[in-house]
Length: 85
Image (cartoon, rainbow, N blue to C red):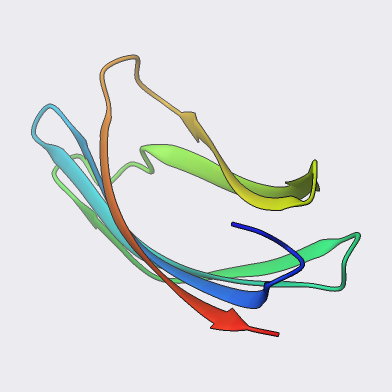
């Protein structure tokens, strides 16, 4: 998402791996060079293990949500609400 147009982003994320499920919200805010984020409202179902770790950055003028899955076979569904500058 273009950093020049949007300052605040809110993601709702559902993660599935086998019979394990996670859901959480992530709120991002940037100042043009750094991204600040908080993760909250996390729900862990099945094994109770976290299925992914999330981070964020700005690259080539875009705010990126970065994900590292715990398992090789992982599915993501997400929605994003973006607020203009």
